[in-house]
Image (cartoon, rainbow, N blue to C red; front, side, top):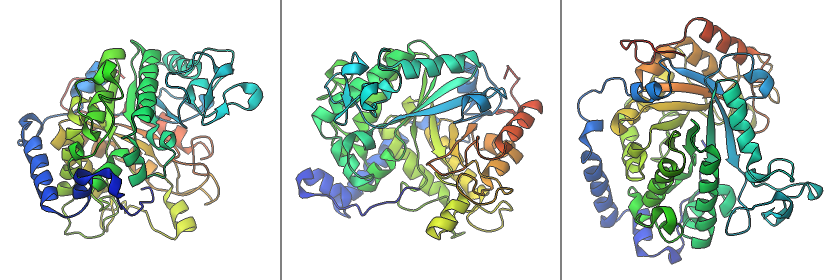
Length: 439
């Protein structure tokens, strides 16, 4: 979980946003409106659903729980991984439109030319004589060559805004100039994908920080129609409209891609994963998150993305003196059963399967040093893929959340061996009663 700043809102946001951030009658009305909006989509609620993962997996030509990660080419080529993911992050071009040449482009005030050391915009993460976007096109081709599904984590609001994560970044999406660049970049991403199959993961953390400010994202201003009349002229200028705009652009420019928003277990200001109170109903917390994301368009997407932790548990213990371990016996809290209960409730409320993303790579045989921290989640997930499937999880992908964490190139080959064994065993059917298709 990221460090959460106090959610104090400057007066210039206006009455609506201020009212959404404090306990007032408007907030109560907002929560009632969220409940009404959620109940307006009965197919995702009520009776216990069947296998929510089936339609998505079938469209991908799969039937088992998918496995993948963020890894180097030498690791990715040693097992029949289903998914390989990368981040597109770091900030955007300085111009209003995407650059047409990296040698003359700038981002964050820095030239993207190789002679100047390059820039942070993902479109120029390659030789400056190649057309912008070649880095992404190469990644898509490499995944296709390995018969892997490419996954992109689009994480640009924070870096583009220049604000600290939390309240400040959410407030920055009101800026029409910034959001025009943002939507132009997203369109450029989608045009590189074209008709290819890909998984698109939108803005981890952002939606949770927005929920800190209001239970109803329609009360949070964002430049949407004003910034992108080309694609989203009918969408409202709010955080809710922003999510719906991003998803609708996928349908328009990358019709074979699958898209999902990110759901955080701490979005209700109570971390459902780290809860130690056995009386807390984490299902209720999950439904609050689902209802907020539904208003942002999550049920119009294809899946939802969740994570277990952004760091190895031992790293937290050593560097911050906090415990982030989950009990693998499920006798004490926090534990894995609680996490899967939250995940299942989230998916059932939205009517969409979920993907476990950026699962820590650490294992208990490591020495507990830089890039080799201990954690028990990787082994628990590989030991219990049936629990992933039972909670409507359609996949699990592993990777480090920050520099210095354990990754598939520093874990002494443990992740690779576990993945190879998983595939050799035939995998875990995501819908055990459904007929198999293919890996």
